Length: 270
Length: 288
Image 1: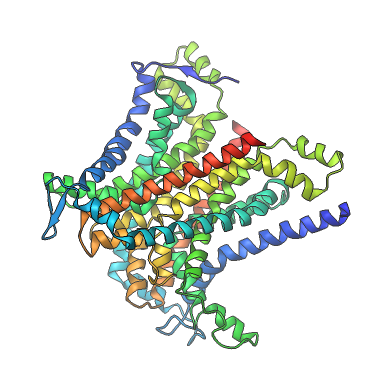
Image 2: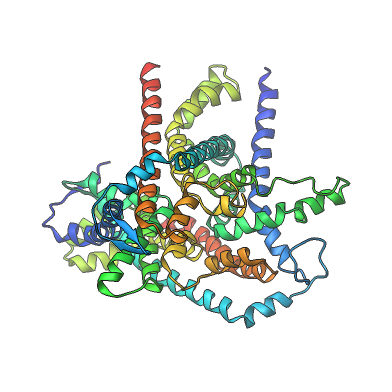
């Protein structure tokens, strides 16, 4: 095969595949956005008309707003706690040499490769048995704990990348200048790891915000946006659900763009 | 550069930071797993757990072919999903690592956003797209195709499509990281030696990106055997996979010991398959 022809063919395959995959990724997303503007009651084409009335209905729907609120609360708590635990674990897993290091890495990262539904079920069993002994039910708190178990390993991996690029000499220098352990963290370690911690936090928020499987198992009767939509698909839908979906996309795209803006700056300061 | 600092477990620098993870994952991951195992030796009576040790659940699991048929179906779907994901992810990851320099960050944002968006929503979006009266058929009819050309919603093909859709980004990310780490001069050397694009890819890039392909495959396989949303929503629940069976066992039949046993069987078989493949892959590498 002629090399120039081969290069051209390679380009066609690479650009073609990329374009096809991007279209593939956005088909369901754009379909949902389109259906949210359907005026009629049914999710079929052609539309009866184009309107925003389902957005109005959304903001008057008690259950939908409660679900939105629950999603926000769970994501807020899960983000702060999972990111903190994950960031500390990342420093330990990358920077320190100690007995049991491999075991620590395995334990701290294990939920990454565990199917979410099964993690949810195993935790549900655990909380049900504990709940019967100590007298509590699954709900918001157990859902938050489940999210933390699942998300902390992700945060660890993301922060670990930043820790790799971090020169420990900087900490030693600060210590030699008389900084206390806390001062070293406050003024050297955390600022230098901040881009990684920030990305991890955004990732954590989105993983929690969009989580279906774990919430479904652990939230008891508490509904979040994903479980609310799942129950809606089952009962026969109306354009209310695509409208919720579209509203849910907005913080997602904002945060992903924000995380991306942050990255080049991180490279410049590190 | 050696950045590792030796620390003893008595040093607060180590244990203060390690302890939260250790406590979290032992109390909320390891302990529940152990308890799940213990539960399989108990009984349920009148929807209540009865703490009596017996092997009834395990004899049930090993005597009913029904469970194993579903498990086999699940494994086939997961392996098919892995194969499709890797084939699609290779050109995408290669392209991301070597071309698209100008649009690189925009493409990554687009992929990340699609990846991070709630799977329930995206799966629901596919239903609206593939439905008899959905967007795909509407668009095709506008182009002159007969009505209901796209008619594979609520089949295994739709389930597979949903699985590939939701898991593909894992393969793209892991293979991308692998290809991005390859020393470019190796590929340039292959060109200098007269190799064309395809030969260089086949003989240099592909073997060197094996860690990423492997990591992506394992991740997708393990996540693929646990899917529940796709067979339920896109597959229409007609040919259930293991996760759906397990969920039903817990929710509908309220048989916790059986559900726990099926969960463990699924995980054990999945891990066994991964180990088996890694053995085969390792032997092939040694033989080369």
